[in-house]
Length: 329
Image 1 (cartoon, rainbow, N blue to C red):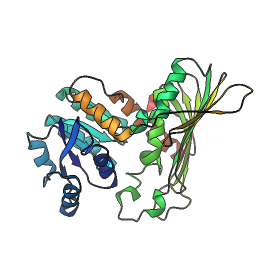
Image 2: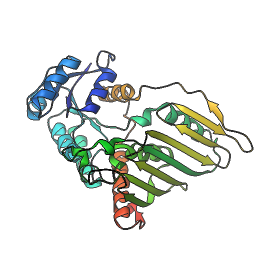
Image 3: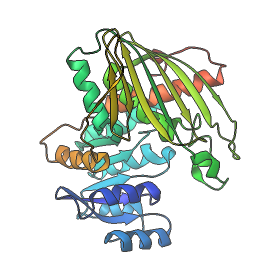
Image 4: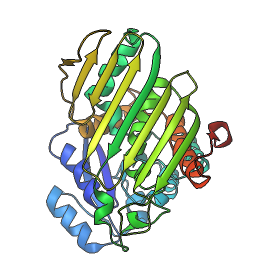
């Protein structure tokens, strides 16, 4: 049983804990840390864990095997590097880091220390992701032409200036780091790396100084084009559609729904078996630590996702000018 400490206690740390605590025989949360003593006590009470009074104390504890980092995005690289130096296995929430360079530094620290680095791109574990990969492997799409994705939600409408997500540094391009990064990762897992990005970002409804409406055109190195929209001020949606010469697929990722359309026919629903993606990713992390599998989101893929995010922000700042990914990595 892998004994982990949850670091940075908020809404998402609770979601991860609910997925595994008392439900997994591979990984458990044994302790927790936040700068807030109130948050530490509340988390420990909710999930039956110990608590530490500093990150240093977590890293010094020989009974803690791993850390689960849900800290602000700008702290990920530092926290990963420190954990690796202490010999702790690392699960870090997306985005991995805020720059490709700090991502490379954090990944190198884990490689040098010989610890597992797992980045929490849970949609990679979804039923939709598996079904699309099967179709691609079977050549069911024929020539893949285009993919379009949208991951949006209402979060920015509720941000107040004191929230860390209300900072442009922590929320580059509005919803990219919190939502869009999931579908960047998933599209790259399906179609390979992005070669070029054109993007735009605007603030339309948020009451804090971050963008809430962001879109981008992608040129994948393998040939297809792509589109990503991520709005941080509209009703929740998480969709991914794929278009090819032999078939189209229309998917609602979080709803585990897919319809496939053959030429000249109406879209037909496919039955998908729902997956608890949070439990699946954390248990695969535990399996990777014991050496039975390789965690499916490779460090180089996580770094590329960050580079795409950076390119979107740079393109939007330049009025939608194309950004070549070779210049970001």
